[in-house]
Length: 270
Image 1 (tube, rainbow, N blue to C red):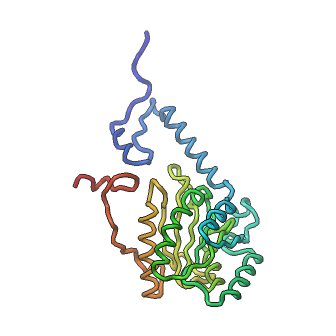
Image 2: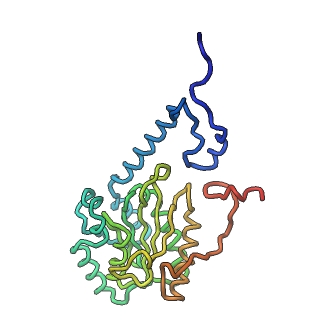
């Protein structure tokens, strides 16, 4: 006897899926996931793995910055390649000796130092850097110049982790440093960009001395909002001479409602 009853049992929360990329209301087929949900999961997992191993297109970023009149410094961490980088996080936190020497030579030619050093590193998702670093940096630098801050050449660090920015900032004699870095990919966000900010950077600082703004991407925190929050932290750091756990993000948000990516659906219609 032919049975027209659907194999998959729908989830009554299905309507909520349009509000979030989270894997909710997937339905079921017996005691298992429906085939489409399982295939979607495998695809997302493959995207996350690809993001981790995607090569850092530093040449493309350098060329785009050159068109804007921005100089760059190509550097490398102490991790020789991706395999070593993934197994030895400590090596990704320090510069290779040749890169460190290059920064010392640059600092000798620019002994006045900088107000802000900007670092871009591949981190765990070069995809995030390639998609979001340049449009975010354009907004950040426009506002930083409005504050009258001097900017270092953009340091492009291959196989870099967050703490490598402290060494870059220290060698460039910068008052502040911010690193734009690819975050660990999630199963719904293989291209999330993270921002880490430090006042008075130097080698040996831990995460307690840094401020983090994460999930900068079109489906997450917008470039404009991220720049707004980072500029607040920088202004406060200049005023209070500190960063990290003692510096809270209390920036007034321009809006909590609105349409499009990043809108707060819980406040919609209130």
